[in-house]
Length: 329
Image (cartoon, rainbow, N blue to C red; front, side, top):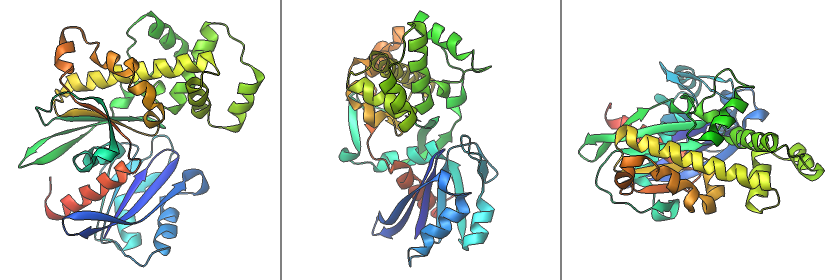
């Protein structure tokens, strides 16, 4: 039995998997809101108390920089240590990996129902890029390890500098520099980033926000209000904001494809993109993905897919543990 976890800035997803033949079968899963718990240890106690299955291995995808089997969750502040989890739960082996590395591990095991094709492309290589915007922005790569296996390249690419490409984005950068000393990509490509783009548009166009949207901001998450009212066309600044968000998303995805020549494909995951699938499939994403000058033709050959399975990181973490059970990569 394998205990898998996806630990983000706002939620923890846990799953208990078992080997059934050559497949992994999900026996139990649950979602927990981080704000309701003081740390991961309490969540694990609650989860395992509700099942008779006892895991032997565990792997957790964590939204933060993992070093020496420990991690401080970037947008949450929890400290997580694999040795402490191993001791507390009596589990033989525990691994912590970056949450996007966990998502990347799921890619070879995703079915047709788990993805939405954004660009068919031509599968002619094995390098794969994965990026996902949610509470923050994560990036990871898969490269061929030979014999049909992959090696995972964990990154903190979401914390690279935001590079504006046109006058509009330059003005957006100047706007954000009023709030931050340095603007990383995830300051724009994240849930809070969508709201920041919206705020910039209102400020730039000197728009007064109506009372109804202010009431919604008080009652719901900021990004959800912007996305909902952008998609239904009720708010013009919201509509522009989500379009700009998707355009920048596409541009960053194209950069990743160039950085490692990911001819095996680019996969977009996270909690935001599936809710914007109509824009992701429109010109806003792919046109900016392709807008790389002389390399446009090369990028047109790369498959681009949207991950619809919101448990992809759990599946990937479980497969990582299963793989490590047999061989050290």
